[in-house]
Image 1 (cartoon, rainbow, N blue to C red):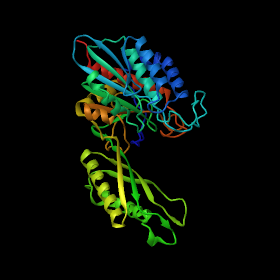
Image 2: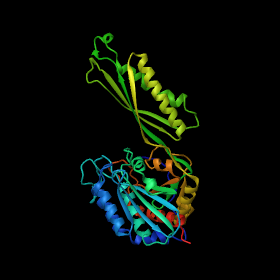
Image 3: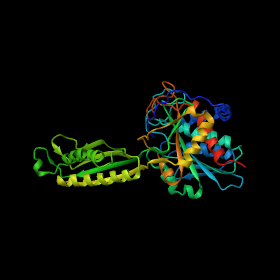
Image 4: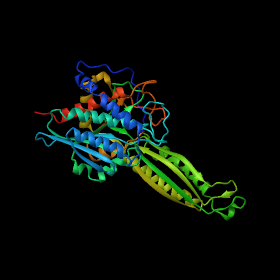
Length: 406
């Protein structure tokens, strides 16, 4: 997940009571060690077998009912107490990215071209720390811990859902967090309503007829048609999307031919498409398909459009968000929370879960400057271990509030 969020103007001011954070911090070293181990052995989406095994073994040790292989390499730990029918879901992602690490850390990736450049190692360790604390806590209801594979564009959340995640492990509400470089440790950020954009990956293949570059009249040039499509696509946001709604149509790659004197048979365009609501998302898809097909036709070529949904708009439901805010303020006070005025055009696989259930997605500070400030998806990035106790405490506070024992 990539994002840009408003910068916090000051570090979080601790409230009068921070007992929970202190209690988890006293027990955090084993979880920092787990985080470093996972960081040193990163695994890409749907290949998180080692990470899943670590998660499953720890949860089983603490008394959770453990189910593995959910949606591929996903793991769910369930803990039921009391007689309440209430159930809460807490989610962490586990996959790494195809990036060569450059941090030089003692626990740097040992796998070539693979690293935890988005902090999912930290998210996993954070939820494990919360799981350990909750294993001996008093609550009434069902706690479902969801360790998700393949968040980075491969559809891990939708695969878990298709595998019966919420039928097998019913939840009333579901929550997740993500670290935020550039925001002080101990500070949280969230907003009501849409938090993050949908993300669609689109490939347009334009097919013409190859010919010698010196005799273009004998061919049908897909490069010219593709260029026309690129220019026409720019009109969608400018002239079709309501001005008060945000949308992005980016052509990030054009591939055609290998020689200057040869008209190729095909040309391909690769697009990233984003929106903050489903209506706009659907409009973008319809216009992209129409423009691609008709622009190509006007040049005597044809175009096929492969439209792949990576994520939906991530919408924070009102009651779940109020619970999330209450838990945050119980830990760090109102000064430790930024209410974001605007949504972010980054995206998150967790949106598939919030499309099915009420939920809330929260950002936690990863640090500023040289300590935690490096952007995600960067070879120099690292999750800040100082953030672990805050994230784990938030997960615990959520659970204890929603599954409050009588």
